[in-house]
Each structure stands twice: as C-alpha cells, then as structure tokens.
Image (cartoon, rainbow, N blue to C red; front, side, top):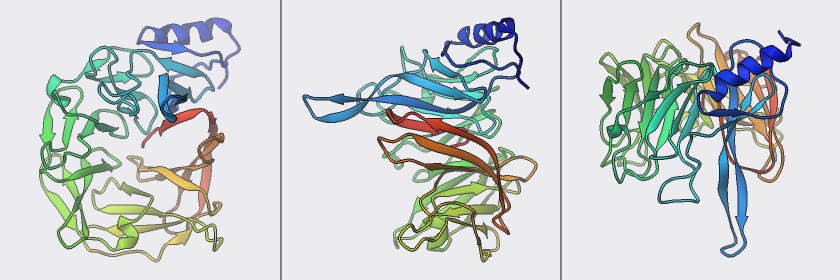
Length: 327
C-alpha cells in the first residue's frame, strides 16, 4: 500500500541509511523494506581493453527505490575484476556481503536492527573468491570457497548463534530447502557423473546421482520436505521450445514427466526456491549483456507448469553483475 506522506519516506530512508545503506532517488513506499535484487556497474578499462565491476552494490527495492549498500565491498581484495560476495534472502529482507574495509562477512536486515558480523573463520586468510547464499528467511548463510572444494569445505552458519556446520570436502553448494533445515550440494564423481546430496543440518542426508536432465537444469530448488527437487530446464529458441519444469525425488529417484512453462524460449531461470508453505517460485530474466534486463518473479505449479507473475522489474544495461533475491 503506497503512502503519500513525505515524512514516511524520510523515516524509511533514515532506517536504511543507519545500516550503511544510502537511499537513491526513486519514490519510497511505507512498510517493511525488502529488496528484489542487487547490481554493480560495469566500467571499461581502455588500457587493458576489459570490463570490470566498479562503484558500489545497489539494491533494487520492492518499492522502486535504488539503494546503495555503502558498507559492502564491490570487488575481491586481490582480484579487482571479480565482484565480492553478495546475497539476498528469498523474502528480500536480509543481505549477506563482504564488508568493504576488511572483507569480513556481514549479515544485515534490510528493515533495520543490528548487523551481524560473522566469525573471521568464515573467510579465512587466503580463501580467495567465495560465494554465499542465504536461507529463504535469512537466518542461515552458506559459504562456498569456489575452486578450492578439496581444501576448504562448504560451511553453513546459523546467524543468531554462530553455530557452524561443515560439509564434506569436495561438495559444492546449490542452495537451501524451503524451510532452511536442509542444504543441497553437488559433487563431481570419477565416472563423470554428478551426485546430489540433501544434508539435514540436524543430522542425516539423502544422496543420489540423478539423470542429466536434472544435473543440467538452469536452476534447482529443494522443497521443505528435504527430498523433492524442482528442476527448471532451459528452453530452445531455435526449436521454439519454452522452458520446462520437472520434479525429482532424491529418496526414490522418481522423475516427473514435466510441463512447459508459459515463457519465451529465451527466458532464463536465474533463481528458484520453495517457500516454507510449499509453494514453488522462480525468477526469470530476458536481456543479454549490454541490454536492460527484464526480470519477472513467478509462482509455479510444478505439475501443470501454470505460473502466476507476482513481480516485474528491470536492471540497468550498465550492470557488470546482478544478484536476485533467493539466488
């Protein structure tokens, strides 16, 4: 619900600004602040003839504002052509990023309240490039150490307590389950197949090597039951085939027949997640590099393929990289 009061807009800006976020010029909206996505600008180095990230991360808020996250590092310490880790929870209410002055990991509510500084061990010296993901409600963060899976295992940290779960060496992170109680990982095997594992953070796991149609999906999402996967499969523009969705049961190995999605063949699924109530969501994008990206958020029926659009926004054509809520 939009509020015409300038006072309400100023109050919202004051709360966000106090957390190291700088409001942009777009119109504000009353209510709990939430982010749709974040992006960082691309600049061109004429000397080396390369593009690189520059400036600071900007949030695209659900009320239309652009908000600069001034405390977040834009690039890696030793790789200025690589963006620093940044993530947004699926509900859009929590951020995780590397702090600009020392690259420590921070988890911060968008709406206000204290930011949580994670232990130094979350980003050990010499870790290099890292990736982070947040649970759907932002209460847990998963950290992947990129090209060093055999030296640094994936970690899952509970934000409120600092409790850390260390996953087996060699696993790479894929995401959280819909209720945040499980995490999904992948592992490349010696026979050129890939094994998926759903680890219950309280103990126990389900492992299976799925068919290639699942492993090759654009996006995978683990349901709150900890065993059902939604696999979003790319469309084929040449054959005018739209993207599809299928479900796969890690416990039984059962693969559904699948259903076409009401999308253009070149639409790319950039994020997918289940909400705790068992609804499946997907974020799809159209727009190549150098063009304005058009992003839509959908609620999807995985059996019929029916989809309802719940949000739509654009991302600047000058972006170097972007991160969607739930990605």
